[in-house]
Length: 200
Figure 1: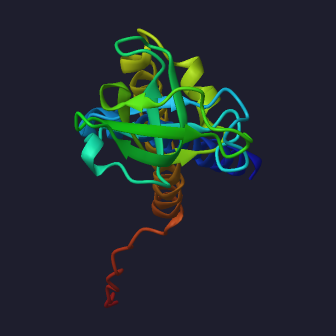
Figure 2: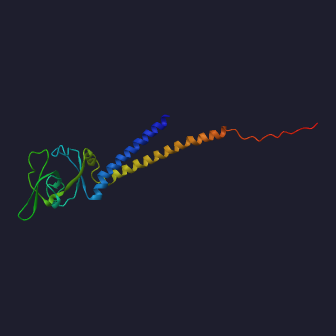
């Protein structure tokens, strides 16, 4: 009786892990790639409590003309450089030459960011965020991003499939044994005896 219970628990945990890894793959890899978005990790407390450290933010490309005051957006500190900042847009101005300049400020900061941001520096606006998942993003970041999570999901899926097959096989076996026992213990049909009369 204990073995089926343990097997059921292992199967449940396997399926749970499979769903978790599949969800991570969707959030970290599939959705960003399908939409051209970029997953980033919040490392500082400048956007608390909205985006505490460790939060995963998925930044979707947005045309500068579509960026609005109040949105949270990501910009490059220097155009073409990898260093980025994710803050809230506090003001938008237009120069005499027609260029748009964006003023950013972190929700937890008392002052706006030091320099105005040009349109060419914008990476996009925050599409969605998941608290705590940024640390996972940091762990799988780099060259292994494209295969680590999908490989883990595939391994867990294969393991869950094996456990399901073993469970089905184990569930079928007792039925076969019972049928065998019943057929072995069932009395066979005996032919009716013919009574012969003897004349003396």
